Length: 233
Image 1 (cartoon, rainbow, N blue to C red):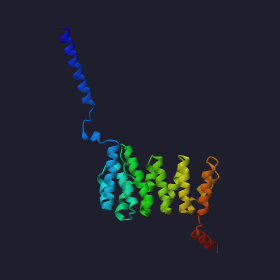
Image 2 (tube, rainbow, N blue to C red; image 1 turned 180 degrees about the vertical axis):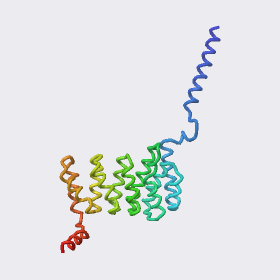
Image 3 (cartoon, rainbow, N blue to C red; image 1 turned 45 degrees about the horizontal axis):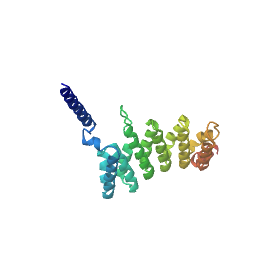
Image 4 (tube, rainbow, N blue to C red; image 1 turned 45 degrees about the vertical axis):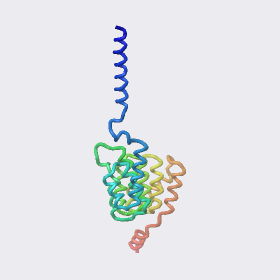
């Protein structure tokens, strides 16, 4: 009787052990590819496409997962692209995922890399989507990269979005980056806000010094000055 009980117990234990091991095994090939191996695979994939041509990288952006998209944007800029197709693709992905109801955290990473690409290419057509990103994105990192890109592009069309960040004052890092970008653009329309910032004791001396430097980079608006002179004659 004891032998039977022991045998049944042993068989039950072995069955339980087998089921436990089965549960721990990956249920699909997808699961076994997560983590470092998958990351290395994606990097190798993009390196090969980058060595081929720009069209292959853009195809990867359009069809790949978010990690592939982000890597492809970085590769595009490293290749020194200035093509219209690349610029159009970058501009479209600057607002990628912002309009969807269910926000995907990996979309944030794609927008970040698209903004970094826009900063490198410096196309004026990127100003509007970069401004839209600044207004709508909740990621501080993305906002800062987009602000930097507007400064690099240097178009006065980006002034309004940058001034809005001075006034919103979400955090010091954003205010500092917006101040530097306004100094690069040198639009007289930002002068009053920069003067106010330079005198604002809420901010560190580093930020206020950045405001002073930005003011120094703003050239007098000769158009309005000549108009005023003509009106007084």
